[in-house]
Image (cartoon, rainbow, N blue to C red; front, top):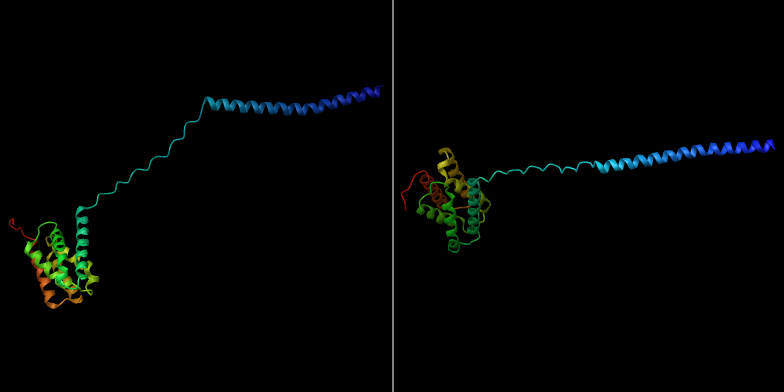
Length: 204
């Protein structure tokens, strides 16, 4: 009987020992749950500040295009178109239709004082004669257009710069297979125009 009582007591003690860790685990779980609930309540009561959008990148203010530079580019491009059109024509008769466009571009080439209309017309005629059907000169159309534009703005060039432009035009034409007579005519034309752009003319 004593032995049975002792066994019963041992079983009770063993049951108590097993119950303690389980109870501790339950208490810990309840504490964790309570802490999590409290954290959620605190977050709801004090929500985090809204995320701020990134600062906007300041717009870059591109400088406006230089009107003189733009006018120069457009004029040189227009002259090149005229020169190419003359080169596509077999002779001056068929190239005559392009002359009004060339005169217009030559007239607008001068950004300040303009040469006399008669001088512009003579240069157009002589250029038409030199360029019509001349494939050898075609690779130099861009450089020739730049030089012609510079001549029409000789008031902004020094005497040495003007002489360099005259020499460049002469060399381009000679290397492009233009006859000596036509080369002389065009060089004389641009010298006349250079002089006229540096003085004031009476109203037409």
